[in-house]
Amino acid sequence: MSGFQDSLDSAHGAGARAFAGSFAHRDRASRVLPRGVSSSPRATQRPVALALARAEGARVVDVDGNEYVDYALGYGPLILGHTPKVVRDAVDRAMALGLRGGSAHAAEVDLAERIARHVPGAGLTAFLSTGTEACQLALRLARARTGRLPVVKFRYHYHGWSDAIDVATAPGNDGPATGGQDPSALAHVVVLDWGDAEALERALHTPVAGVIMEAVAINAGCFEPPAGFLGRARALTRASGAMLIFDEVITGFRLGLGGAQALHGVTPDLTVLGKALGAGLPISAVTGPAPMMEPMVAGAVSQRGTYNGNPLSTAAAIACVDYLAENAADVYPRMERYAAAIADRARDAARRLGAPIAVNRVGSCVQLHAGDTAIATLNDLSRVSREGTLALTESLVRHGVAPLPRGLMYLSAAHTEADVGRTLAAIDAAFAACAPAVSRAVAAGRA
Ligand code: PMP
Image (cartoon, rainbow, N blue to C red; front, side):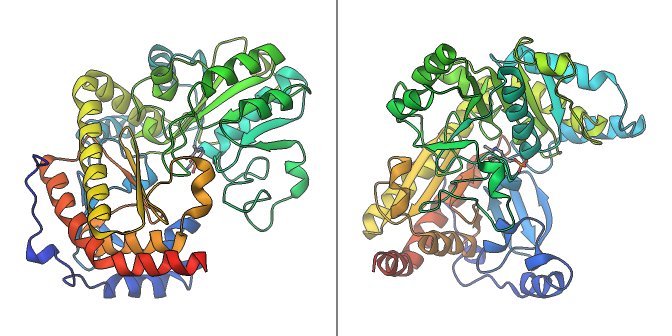
């Protein structure tokens, strides 16, 4: 028994949903927005990119009036849900004082002090607006501080879409992730398999500026670090003079106040933060002990950005971090318990149906993969069927549950027992409805 009150009333059952409004939205939007959206992955959602009319807590409602329990959470940032009172109040208060963009103000200092308190590897903090910018700054710091050019990144880890690092993010493609990239910007990026300590050791025999990784790989499908690998990477980078950079854009403040580094007891030289830090407002950060940030202090590396540290984002982030700190003993275990219930139910449903679906979970993140029942490491990703996963997430949408199209589900502090109960019932119905399509997609992928 799950202990949750399952409910899938008829209004939320299969076939009850129509998407005419979202399709009409797409047609109109496509005349003025490329593919009708403002970030390419959003266009992959099936049956159509849902046009949202409103949201509250962990629920979203589309323009057709369909309600969903939301696990996309704005691609991760909404760790307090869609309408967190503490964040709205803080933003209202900041707004009442005037926008004051592009100036020095107290909240950016208050926030940096909080980050220094909670994140083991923090010290001086540079604020930016997006994870992409923050990763770019971290790489510049590594190159400037070491006077070296090569950077090591790992297959399938994602560090934003800049020309300098958007490489080897999908199985079978070790090259640029998208058209229009300057391949020469990647000339000094060395791509390795995550967990291959021997390959990392060999790579570090030549001078390397930095090693960047998601300390827990959420993007590619929720993978814990291979046993001992973070510690080895720490020791090898320290011995070789390369800087160790943990990209905690997803894991920061999500896996706990101190992120993946606190959980795993390995402290990097630089930490990149984003997403959950701002509870949905745009803010990111690079933080590290003063000696690691020295090129910025000395003025050798400049930090640019019109919106950096803006009063609305910093106010939201302070409210978010304080809420998480005050409620950590409740929020983190609860999100994990809900995520575990969802993962267990999904595994049971897949097993019962004999469907080729794997379920991974790390903390409050759950990943559904179509393709195989065991996708245990990043090297198994070549067996994942993108088509099958899209069919699976479409079926969940049709049953009132909204994951990311690629199968990732985030929990928030706003999810309730009732939300999870409804989700568990929806998983049973959605998996049963899509199992044949998922199996066909996986078989076609193998053919
Ligand atoms: N790093 C990681 C680990 C991410 O997950 C992301 C975004 N998904 C980024 C960097 C880039 O962040 P942004 O989309 O804010 O540019």
